[in-house]
Each structure stands twice: as structure tokens, then as C-alpha cells.
Length: 113
Image (cartoon, rainbow, N blue to C red; front, side):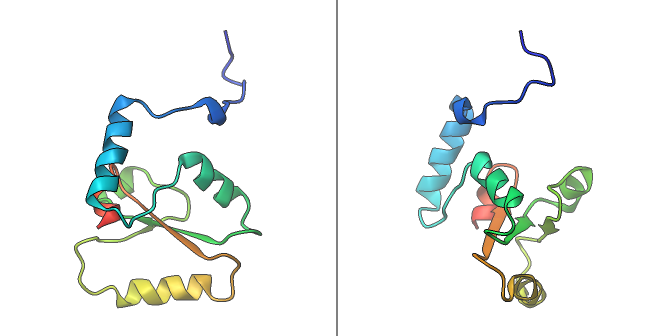
């Protein structure tokens, strides 16, 4: 029996059936969009000296208001004018090491679009 203070071994964590199905579906629908594991994202966020990561949250405002990842920027995936967002991201990444943009939503449809 483990206590709540025991560390979680993420290396042994595998997605369940429904998440695996969702990932496969996203890969078929959006073959050029790369997916990363939460473990990789965590590593990137914990080592900013190696990689500068910008998080884009493509969920509805109501979902974002309930919870979101630290420092995430909410984007409206249906907005046709992305000039302000692009300028903001360029400013954040200017001169940074290994600039990376990670877009997320609930399942992957909006962030892959």
C-alpha cells in the first residue's frame, strides 16, 4: 500500500484503452501533428534552461476559467485573426533556446486543428 507522499513512477504509466483510441484517432485525422506524452511535457517545463515552452490552451473560455496549466495562453481555435497571438508568441520566444509551442485541449480535436 502506498501513501499519498510516495512518488508516482510515470515511466510505468500507460494510457488506458479510451485514451489510446483517442490518440490513434487524432493521429489518423491529423497525421502531421506531433503528440507528446505528459511526461515529456513535464520534463520540458521543468528544464526551461534547455527548452522554452509556450503552452496554448485551445479550450472554451469556460473550461479555461475552471482550470488550466500554469502560464498557458488561451486561444480561440475558431478565431481567424491570429496576428496578435503570433506576435505575442514571437516576443516570448525571441532569442530563447529550443523554442517549442505546445497546444492542448480536452481531447485533441481543437488543438490539432
